[in-house]
Amino acid sequence: MHPILRTVVQRLALALVTLFVVSIIIFSAVEMLPGDFAKAILGQSATPETVKAFQHEIGLDRPPIERYVDWITNAVQGDFGSSYAARAGYKRTVAGIIEPRLWNTLFLAGVTALVAVPLALFLGITAALYRNSLYDRTVNALTLTTISFPEFFVAYMLMLFLAVKYPIFYSLANVSADTPLLERISRIALPVMTLTLVIVAHMMRMTRAALINLLASPYIEMARLKGIPNREVILKHALPNAWAPIVNVIAFNLAYLVVGVVVVEVVFVYPGIGQLMVDSVTSRDIPVVQACALIFAGTYIMLNLTADIIAIVTNPRILHPR
Amino acid sequence: MTTTTPSIEERAGADGERSTISLVLRELRKAPLTAWFGMLVIFAYLFVALFAHWVAPYGESQVFDTPYANWAYIPHWSWLGPIPYWVTFEPTGSEFLLGTDQLGRDMLTRLIYGARNTIGIAVATTLLSFAIGGGLGILAAVRGGWFDQILSRAVDVLMAIPSLIFALMLLSIFGSSVLNLIIIIAILDSTRVFRLSRAVAMNVVVMDFVEAARLRGERLAWIMRREILPNVLPPLVAEFGLRFCFVFLTISALSFLGVGIQPPTADWGSMVRENATLITYGNVTPLLPAGAIALLTVAVNFVVDWFLHKTSGLRDEH
Image 1 (cartoon, rainbow over the protein chains, first blue to last red):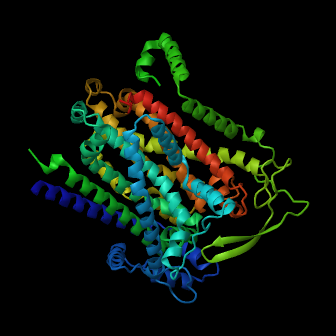
Image 2: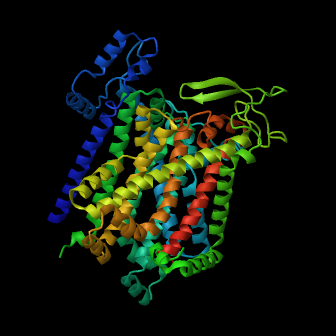
Image 3: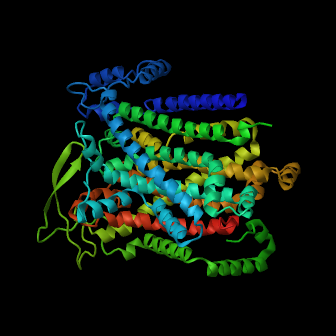
């Protein structure tokens, strides 16, 4: 187990270093702000004093390294400072804005993963099983087409046909904190379908490619020559060795989901973190943008790390070193 | 299309050129239906984009008064709840083939000018991305050592942030203008071009003819342009199609989110956003620009798929 542990620790360290550099990049976003930024936030009527007070408040008069250490230690503890928005009255903490929305997004992504992963595996394996049949060709053409579609096109098509022309589902996914679970699920049906269509296409194609790649290896030929039926060759001989690439594909696509939710949340007005980030970009609410970017990037890096580690742990060539 | 590299064809001269053309024609005749469909669509788009002035029936942001006031009261949904606002949609008809949008501008005209703006910006971004990524990638392969190490690690970090998220963050800082959009997306996308061109160029750098050129005392730029570039071109051409699709979809998504190309420039992504509320009335207007985007990416993907099949000789059938 020793070489595996070493590789895993190496990957972990690499991910942490990446996360650290990414956090520096996200933090330095504030440094790159143009000079008239305070005016843009406070409005044209801002006096020089209020501008100065604002700059003091977000700490622009302190050295950047000190501010970075402050920011990252607070961020690790879940405190992202306060939002620039709604300054006149009370202050809103970034964490307070993000938290309920983060759960909403995780719920959406989780339900999508539960639907999409089994479906993609089924389609990918059956397409490899009945390779070059009409079924395989149809699934292939369909997935190549859905990969090329922008998410909002798929989303509006589904909305038009499944919510407006034939009102089966809700067209908008506006849930609140006290929406019961069952209603919540029925409300997010269309966003889940949109995301599923987009990521199933990727996952299915990659699963099929991984399996077909394996099917070309000599030991499969051997199994076939022994007279083992096609189904068994795939399920018993090919699949166990294909798990590593397939798990990699799944993690990669779940990471893709992180980006996919942004557009879908905006289309269906789902109160998630992606929509929040877009709104904050429009209003240039930098602390919220930074927090969202850090959460998105962190999730992305962690999912890729998980995929890496699973690929290492299941790789027979590393498991049994010569 | 052909497996021979351009440098060989150049040396072959006029005779080689003719045979290249006939080779291309022969390959085209054998091309599958999907590739033909893709090429046809791409040429149609390019034609419309280039001659938008003559094709479009009206001006880009020409507003028409609606004589028989066709006003509608549309609740616009935002995260605050419904915000009502008045709009003047003209139905589809003979005067306005596809109707008018929320400000009374002819939809067909906007779509045609949108082709020019959206495709033009995406092509410019992809070209810039290839200039940066391809140039640095080949340079990293030739120079090697610390130069390569630093660039590769920087690319690793940049690729660790999802590009849409990174683009959103950078746009919130620098503001949304077309120039900012092109530069930001090009730099983010050049990381992928860098990886590919570096990997391909690595295989070429170790060849004897590169060593010979070095010993002859050729300059670095000459080696990159004359010895390495022709040999890494075929995979980069296929990648150009894929990158274009990706850039095109990213810019459309950003415009759709309202932080990309800004009005009054006609652009398909923002046109979907502007007309999105109509969908709740069963009107297909927002689907027209979205469909225009989808059709082009499908077409490019079909052509690239066929091209990859041809150049790599990779067939997953066997």
